[in-house]
Amino acid sequence: MSQESEASSKYLLRLRNAAQVVMVCSNKERVLRGTEMQTVAVLDSDSSRGLSVAVDMEGVIAAIGFDDEIDVLLARSAVDREIDATGMSVVPGLVDAHTHPVWVGDRVHEFAMKLSGATYMDVHAMGGGIHFTVNQVHQATFEQLYDSLAHRLTLMLQGGTTLVEAKSGYGLNLDNEAKMLRVIERAREEHSISVSTTYCGAHAVPKGGTAAEAAQNVIDVQIPALRDLCSSGSLHIDNIDVFCEKGVFDTDTSRRILKAGKEAGWNINFHGDELNPMNSGELAADLGACAVSHLERVSSAGIEAMAAAEVVGVLLPTTAYILRLNPPPARKMMDAGMAIALGSDFNPNAYCMSMPMVMHLACVHMHMTMPEALIASTLNAAASLGLSDRFGSIEIGKQADMLLLNAPKWEHLIYQFGCQRDVIKHVIKGGKVLHTN
Ligand code: NIG
Ligand code: FE
Image (cartoon, rainbow, N blue to C red):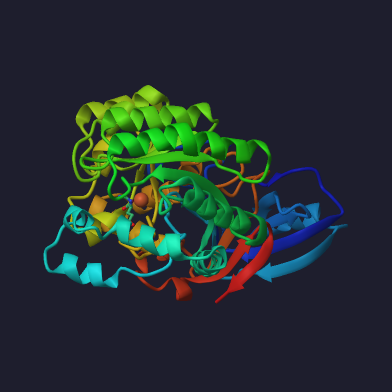
């Protein structure tokens, strides 16, 4: 049963005697859709033989199999570090498909308002919400923003996230959007977590302006300037986002912005159908989007269109929970054959960065099974970012991003709600142990 690449003389890491290795998939699938999400590929130890994973010097998974098989493969090789994984299970590093992690200034006062009955849009219309954070970000220095981002990324990594999507969107003008994107760029260079960068200049309409003016600024000013910064190599942008919502950017305006971003070379990955039905699913399919997030109010036609066009639905259980929204119809989407991913949506409105908690909420509130939630937080989340060729499963040739769990069965990662520090023993990124609880 062993899977191995050609034997080499030196390895960075070997895990030995694990009880379970959750590969997620074993045929290099790039995404799992609909009923394919019902089963994760798991290797189980037997009574006499544990399981091993070997990582090459590039931090890539080189071999997976029973201990004795890997003993033979590594017989004449040096191994930098060996970890005894007795009684433990191994899962891929988690992928958080949707976050807003660059900001200062909390919104705890708004949480109190919402608990007393104010809706998200009530707070927004009063000049709070995104507008509040935009003010804070405008006043913040690059260093202040970077320090808070770096701290959050470290906490995410400690919670098992090894690849995260990170949005701009609290700048709303070229200078401040570029500032946020440069902050994310520095994290890409200096932080050990992997980052996919999303430009979200159309996250809200700046105060005092109209949506049409904001869209024109995004299309005629911000996107061309940011594209030039990308061409010169000083920035990397992977995805374009817009908040397609009643009272923010309508469907036609969103279409124009997303098309301009696609022409700049970025993947379409946007907020849609959250508070009101906006035909975002239909729009995503039409534009060849990689992914749409939220989808609480998606239409049946939108689901069919996304399934046919292979658009990943990114669901955000914490937002629906905090805002007391009806959760998105996850089961209906999977029944229609859609691929579902999960994200924390970490932002000042929804302050949760824990993907194990997100998976738990997805199971309880959205009626997903544990295998579906794990696939949605690994392979499919990576697919929503166009990165599932390198991330999201424990397979030969993939980045060795893995979590060692203090439990012989992987489901404990979801079952033990709020106990991730106890469940996750080691966080391994590129074959290096970056965090141990
Ligand atoms: O995904 N809905 C729009 N954007 C974020 C919230 C951002 C904020 O409130 O600061 C979301 O929930
Ligand atoms: Fe969001």
